[in-house]
Length: 446
Image 1 (cartoon, rainbow, N blue to C red):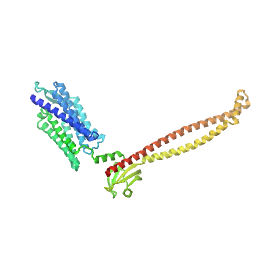
Image 2: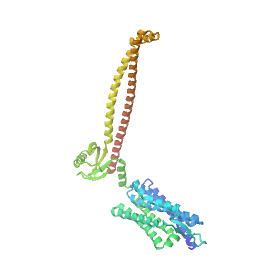
Image 3: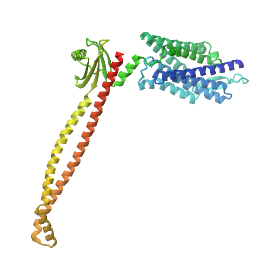
Image 4: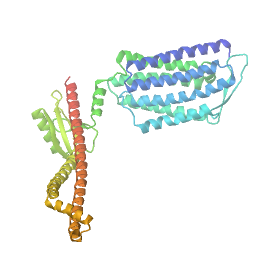
C-alpha cells in the first residue's frame, strides 16, 4: 500500500467518525426521552467505537497494539448489528420489546465479541507486508472467523425482512418514515457488499473508511427526515397509546352498535354482547357512566365509560374489583371479630369491677387477720386462710386472661387499621384511573 493511500484512509476515518459522533449527539438531543432516539444514538455510538478501534489499528506502530485493537473492534461492531435490529423492531411505534427478546438479540453477539476480543479464535495475528510503511499488514484470521459472515448474514437478513414487512403494512406517514430508513439501510448494505465482496483487498485493508462514509451518509438521510418530517417525534397516536398503557386497566372501545373496535390488555375481560349493549346505550343516553358494576365470569368489575361525540364511539375502562371486594370481606370479618372481642372485654371489665369490690369487702380484712393468725400459729384460722388463698389464685388467673384478651384486641385493631389503609390506597388508585380517562377524553376531543 502506498503511503499516500494510507494517509488518505486515516483522514477519511477521522472525518467519517466525527460525522457519525455528531449525528449521534444530534439524534439524541432531538428527543432524549424517546426510546427510538436513545436506541438509534446508541447504535451510532457503537459504530463510532468500532471505527475508532479501526483507526487505532492503522496508527499503531507495534504489532501487539494493532492486534489488540483489531480484535477489540469486533465487540462494538457486532453489538451495533444487534442494536440495528432492535431499532428496526421498535420503529416507528416506539414500543419496547420484552426483556427475553432483547436478551435473545444481544447475548449471541456480545458473547462472540468478547470471545473475539480476548482470544485468537477470530484473529490470530498480523503479518507484515512491507515494514517501511506505517500500516502493519494483514490480519491472520482464526478458526471461528467464518462465524462473523454467518452472523452478518443473519442480522442483515433479519433487518431487511423487518423493514420490508413493516414497509408493506405501513400507510401514510409511517410508510414515508420507513422508506427513509430503508434507503439508509440499503446504502450501507450496498457499500459493505461492494467493498467486502467485490473489492475485498481494497475495501477491507486499504480504504476501509468508505464503509463508515456510507453509514454516515445513510444517517444523514435519516437526520434530514428528523428535521423535515419529525421522524422520531412522539405522534399523538403514540402518545395516546402510551396513556392507555399507563392506565394499568383494561380499555375497550366500541361503536354505537356494540362492536368491539379496540381492546388493550385483559382479553379475558369479555362481557356478553347484551351487557356491552346495555353499557353502550346507557353511555349514549347519559354521556358517561362511572362505577357501573358488572361481572365477567367470576370476576367483579367496575366500568367507567365516555362517549366520543365526533366519532360516535364509546370508550370503556374496566377496573378489577377482586382485590377490593376481597379486602372488604376481610375487613367485615375483622370487624365481626373485633365486635366479639369488644363485647368480651366489656364482660371482663364487669368482672374486674366485681373483683375490685371484692378486694374492698370485709373478706379482705378477714384474710389479713387470718394471715396474722397463721403467723401466730393459730390452727383454727388455717382453713379460712386456705380458702382465701384459693380465691386469690382464681382472681390472678382471671386477671391474666383479661391481659391476654387485651393483647389480642390490640392485635385485631392493628389488622383493621392495615386493611383500612389498603382500601384507601385502592380507592385512590381508582380515582387516579378516572382522572387519566378524563384526560384521554379531553385529548380526544381536541
